[in-house]
Image (cartoon, rainbow, N blue to C red):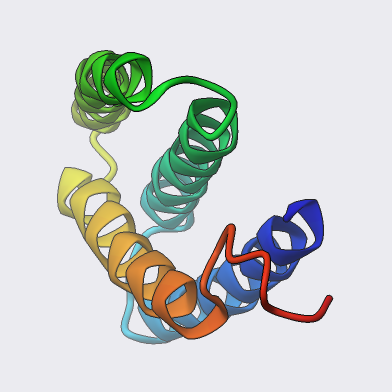
Amino acid sequence: MKGQAGRIILGQLALLGLLSLAALGAGARPLGTGLGALAGLGDTLLVLWGILSGMKKTPQQAALAMHRLMFLRIGVLLVWTVAALKLESQPVLVLLGFVCLNVGLVMQMARCHLGDKKQQP
C-alpha cells in the first residue's frame, strides 16, 4: 500500500512540474506558482496520510477522522491563499494548483486502486 502511495506522489510531482511549467510559460509569477504548487502538494500529502491512517481504524472512527481532516485541509488552503494575498502573488494560482492536483489525485487513485490488496506491487 505504501508503494502505491509512493507512485501516486511521484505522479503528482510529475503533474506538478508540468503545471508549473505551463503556468510560468503563460506569464504567471514564480512566487504564486510556487505557493500553488505547495498548496496542491500539501493537500495531496494530507489526503494520502488520512487514507493510510484511516485504514488502521474501524469504519466509524475512520469516517470521523476524515471529517476532521476535511477541516484541516480547508484551513491549510486558506492559509496558502491568505499568504498569496499578503504577498500579492496571484492567489488564483493557489486555488488552481489545489484543484488541478486534486483532480490528478483522484484520477491516479482510481487507476491504481489504492489499498486494494489484490493488486500486485
